[in-house]
Image (tube, rainbow, N blue to C red; front, side):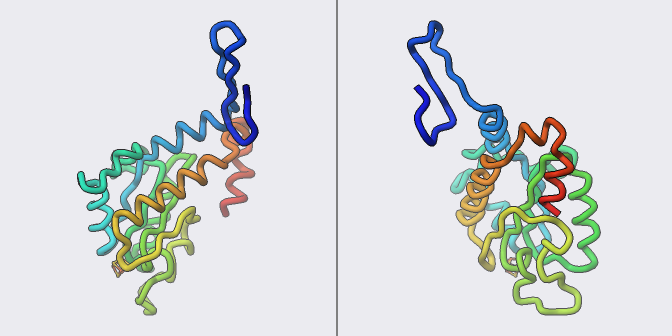
Length: 178
Ligand code: SF4
C-alpha cells in the first residue's frame, strides 16, 4: 500500500502486483539519473571536473559520465572556471542552443562570484548571463564537491513539475527561471 511521503504505491492484493506512481516522479527519476553534462571548462576548475570522470571518483555512478561537447546533446552546463566578459556571450549562446529541460551548475568561486578576480575583465558570477541551479564553493572545489553538487541538482530535479512542463507550462517555467 502507498505510504505517506513516498512516491510509489504497491498493492500485492491486486492480481499482477500493480505498482502505481505519479508521472512527475517517473519523469524526474529518469531525468535525474541521465544528466548529460556540457563541460564549460574555462580555467583551472576544469581540471577538477576532468578528475571527477576518473576511476577514483567515478561520476559514471550517477549516470553523468557522458560529457558532451555539443549543446544539442547535453542538458546540464557545468561552468568550471573564470567567466570573462569576452567569453560570456559564447556561454550564453551555447546555453541557448541546449534543449529544454536544462540546468546549470556553477563550479567554483570564479564561476559563482568571480572569485578573487575583482577586475574589469571578469564577470562577477556566471548567473549574470545564465540561470544557475547549483553553486559549488571552493577554489578549486575537489571532484567530491562536484559530485555533491550534482547530487543536489538531482534533488532539485526530483522536485520539478515535469508533467506540467510537458503539457504546456514551459513558458511559466521559463518565467520562474528568468
Ligand atoms: S575558482 Fe580557483 S581553481 Fe577555479 S577557476 Fe577560479 S581560480 Fe581557478
